[in-house]
Length: 246
Length: 266
Image (cartoon, rainbow over all chains, first blue to last red; front, side):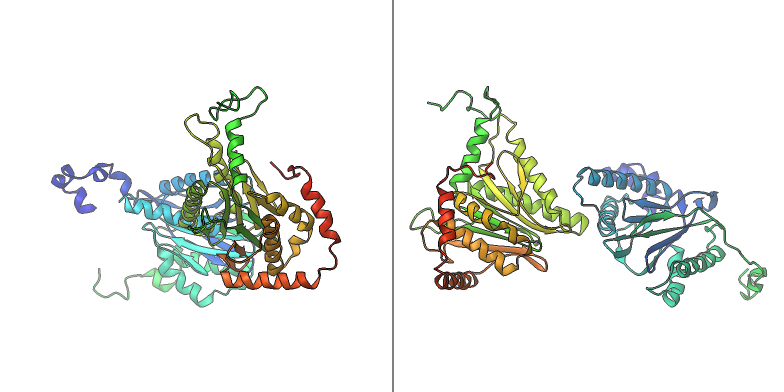
């Protein structure tokens, strides 16, 4: 795409989809990692409330975890406006689902599959929704946690993380996660992950939100900050060990 | 030339508030050979009577699998039934594609009914001349629906459509209260006995009927001829053993003589 955009000759002869506005095809305002885990009663999700304009930390209170219908919770990293568009799709989906008024409702598995169809379809139009999505929920006593990427890769797992979280949080989760964690244990684990991300991911901010979904429903907790400690010797002189780098 | 002046197209009302073309389409359902459906809390059984159009031809298919969790039995114009079964199949497969989960039966039935309803309100269309028994299983349990050409649909514990279905309905009305807790085998047995009622003396054999079932842990499928024949043989052996208490049968014969308006008739 980049090479196309910077090549005026190619742009003139481009086919219709390539002539569509190119500015929508790259992210502008982005959120960073989302983490999701299963615990004894359901699913817990964590994300900070920051949104970056390029590399500038531009917005401080953008909620990136939202409920979808009665049984699902959606967390998003990536382009914020695309996430808002996805939420509009889902609002419509849930509305029409409720309008049947027949006692059936879409569960997390169905919403996950629907999102995957949307993401993959947009990717095939070379106009992806620039997000990594975490979809969790509980329906009929079954916990569900999955991910969808901007190109339509999707999977289920006991714990998931997007973006930097994939590199920094998941190794911790692999070591410490258990299926029968209590709420308190799971929150502690998420906070540990979020703290590591705060230290090492430049886009992360110290204002995070945790949301849970159980058989009883969705609870999205108000944002709060973690207690940090910056006195580690490695933080005081970060280039000390990297001889000759700069 | 015409039976009356209000029946030349579907959209014309009679002064009495009737749509004759729609009613004629409902009659087409009664012409077809019988189809029967009954359900317990975990299974739905469909059974149909197979009639060949001529000595030289085979019979037409009356039971269609729509998806793993849904199947239909039809009575009336088979050609219309086939078109509708294709529609149902595509609705199910599209739902599975998008949501990776089976389409709830109640929704499928509403979509089918809406499709039939459109035909009763367009001057350039004709209603489907087919009645469908839709059997299916979803999150909410086992379901049996009847969809008719008028665009109406009803949920049943047990129902019969097609020619001489009244006899089967009478049988089902007498027994349906036990169906909800019935085992799979009992349900099939009742289905076969209901089919037998519609035959009016003709011998019940596996070649004259098709039986299909859908239920918990059992995707929709037709029972093969051998299985059906075995069940029929067991039934006949049972009947031969208990030929004494014929009293109950006498009562039902009285009911069958009554005019062809069952409380369930639509």
